[in-house]
Structure formats: structure tokens, C-alpha cells
Image (tube, rainbow, N blue to C red; front, side):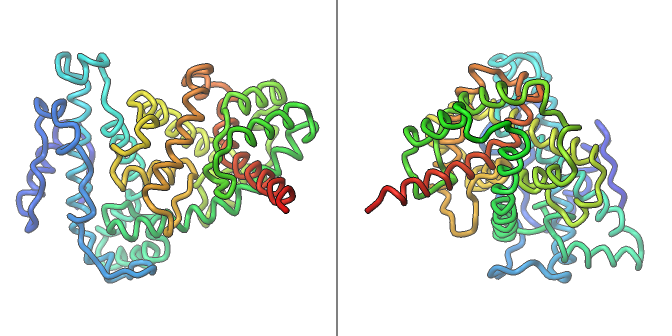
Length: 380
């Protein structure tokens, strides 16, 4: 089976493959009903619909991945069908979406599904191609079992595995936060003890409500953005960042993989810019729907996990979903002030905006450690 993604033929292909499925599938939304079913039919398949394994904290075996492959393909094709339904609804001249936000408007949940599917298709293209080659194509499962989250999308393993992978990725990113922050303070900033830095630390100390949990530290994002504008104007560019710093930034941004050190610098640059674009657009959608005002309670567990994982917020295995929602809410409050004063387009197109987004979490982590040390010294 060779999967091709085209406009209308994909609809008939999806229906043909799904008709013969042995499992019960959710009814796919039609073009006319997509706009009005924003919280049921258009959500991703829940983990309960995927094959369940008794996992513990281990990675899936080759046998489990091979067994789950047909079901994963059906889930993937179903999401492709949903992708086109969402796109058609956003281009319809008269429905609840376009009447509210204009042509091409879609709610945050559907916009994130579009983004995630595009990422998933890039990830699974190579394994799906090799899996359809007789005999020798079976070798691809060895690599998939080695790094399932690198070669396969979540369609091919259940939510427990997905959470374990995001937890492991967060630990890797957290280890790179301090290194990336040190790169910024020691090589980009002229003087780490500049008045702007002292003002930033003091504003963090006054606005921080929980010094014991540094990752959730609350600060005014505008102050940090102004620091970038004052100190990095016409000086912080991609060419001014050496290769080692670029690797540190990539790891801190959740883009680490075994081949990262072999990638050309322009490839890493494109990856980082793409990650920033995804985060900024999703931030704008979440803020527009006022999720930071409701503590992100309207997001599902999978949605809040994915949102925290993309931004480098705490999402380790022992972290509760309530604490993830709190972390995401605090982050969105930071970005709300930046989006109001700076704007989404400036964050996407200016060098200052891109660097601000890349260094935001490393600097927050670095400052939280500095503040925790200051508090410890003051305690009797």
C-alpha cells in the first residue's frame, strides 16, 4: 500500500480502507457539519481507541509495533480525512467558524490538529515507505523500536507510551536549559550584571508566587523582550551563533535526535524557526480563546500534555495534569502581555522575536535557579 495525499481522491481512499476495519470507528464529520461539531467529531481519537498494552515505563517492542501498524495506519488515514474536512469548513463562506473569524478561520483545537498532522506525516513517511517493501522492509521496525517517537507518530502507540516519551524528552531539554542560558549570558550579553539584568531579576522575584517550583516561575514577558531589543539589536543573528550554541538551542527546543550533530547549520535553523512559528501561532490561538483565564481546564489531557511538551514546560511522568495546566496558564499570561505589546507578526518575523521565543524557557529556568539560591541564603 502506497499512501498518496491528494485533494479529493484521498476522501474515497480513506472510506475504502475504513469500511473493512474490524473496529468501531467514530463517524467522520461531513463538510457541512464540521463547523458546528467543534468538540466531538473533530477531536483526535482518544487513547482508549488504540490498542492497549501493559507498559510500565518501557519502550514498545518490535512485535508490538508490527501488531499495531495496521490499526495505526487506519487512525492516520482517518486523521487525514478529518484534515480535509476541517480545511473545507474553514473555506466555506457561511458557517459558524467563518461567520465568527472570517475566511480560513478555525478554532484552536482544529488548528492544532492540522499542525500536528503535518508533523506526523513528515515523521512517518520513511517508515511507511519501507514497511511496504517485501522482506527487506521489515528491517525498519528495528529502528522504530529503537526510537519510536522519532520514526513513528502517536497513531502507532498508545497514550501511556506517548506520555513516557514526552517525559524523557522534557528531562533532556531541562538538562540543556542551563547550558543554553549560559550561552546567552556569556556570549551574547555584553555584561551579565547590567542594570537591565538586575531589573529583570527583581521583577521575577516580586512576581514569582512559587520559588520552590522554578519551571512555573511567573515573570513579565515584556521586560525580557525589551532586554533582547536593547542588547541584541542588529547583533543577534543566526550567523553570529556558532554551531555548538545552535545544537544547545535545538536540544533545549525539543529537537534533539541522534543525527543532530551531523545536520548542517541551515537545517537546524529551519527546524528552530519552524518550531517558533508553531509555538507563536498556537499561543495566539490559546490566548484568543482565553484559556489562560480559565486555567486551561477546557483542554483535554492529551492537548495539555502536547502544549507543555512543545513549549518545554514541565511534563515529566510524575507531573499531574493539574500542574501542567497551571504551568501552561502562567506561560500564556507571560505571552499575553508580549502579544498585546509586540504582536504575533513581530515575534514570527523579527530576529529579536525568534530569539526571544527560543531563549524564553532556558532563561526562565536559569533565573529560577538564581532566585531559589537567593531565597535559600536569606532563610535562617
